[in-house]
Image (cartoon, rainbow, N blue to C red; front, side, top):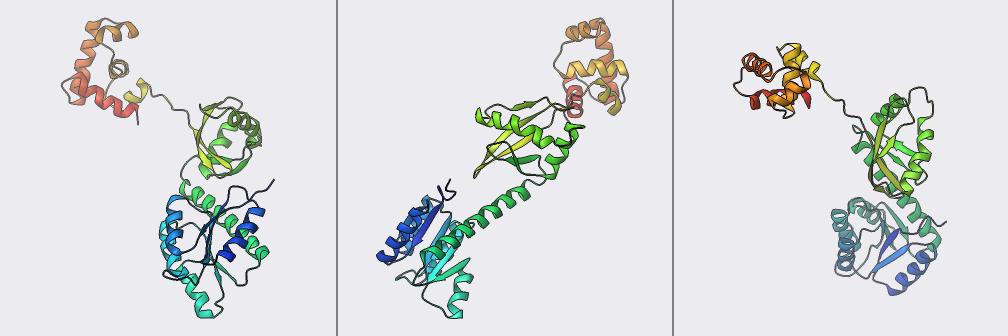
Length: 295
């Protein structure tokens, strides 16, 4: 399998002969080559399509490669740019790096050398983006797997959650792999319910990242109970039960049926609740309760 398939290389050179030679070399290795004869064309192409890497001729009329590079790095800051140059003075090489270039090759171009450098820099750029994704999600419970469900990376929080849910399972990621593989094959449209560990949980599909899948561990929501109201408010056990059901929109009659008491008794409890909470209606009391129940 050619791992280069799908990688886009933008070649910027004012020499048709050089463009033709590079186009053939890149296509033979599975790359998709886009060509531009000048800096303006390159900027226009990069605005519409994000290349995986750019091969940039340093010396071109009107807008030279250095200026084109500077502008491209504004458009596509994560795209690596390799300069192709006949200029070998240290000053010119430094100028290329200062413009945002990551490497350079000297003319006449050796196709094998260019291909090797392209492959290395594309891999490095993708690893850097993967690492950045991991850092961006450091406080989140996300992880990344292959099409076969095998773990690529996970944030510390995701590792901790899976370990906690797994109980005595010493290789939870291996246990998950087959489940994830089948789920991904089915499209992953709905959350995956995981019931093979001590604690059940769900996995949600976030997005595709290159040839990997970014997923998220969905923690089970812990339902609050009347006890939580009693713990946080100056009310009795029975008053907390009344307030709990009133908070969920139950009428006095419905609350009385649930708690096996008369509607009059429910109303008496509510009067005490209003007094203790310093409010004068059920809406205000329910608002205080909901803040606790949903925290």
